[in-house]
Image 1 (cartoon, rainbow, N blue to C red):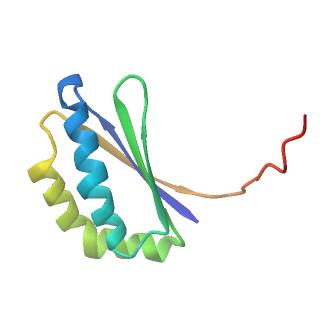
Image 2 (cartoon, rainbow, N blue to C red):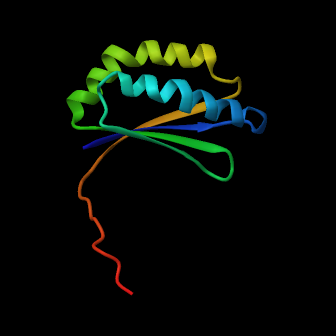
Length: 104
């Protein structure tokens, strides 16, 4: 699996509107591309946000980047609050562990 992450540094005065835009519009639009299996949206205490998208394989991510990302990035630029700084990264799962039932 491939995880595509976008980290946003958001000024304090824009955090509420940024979170609303991400959860109500942008992330649902990214998932509607059909290129990802799931998404998560997280907030760090210092006002950084992370959107993580899981693709089944590199081909699905490349299809998203080629066919959907340009329009979605333009929409983001037109509607997201001012002052948001983004960084992007792609992570490939090397190995995964799942915890068994918790014991007491």
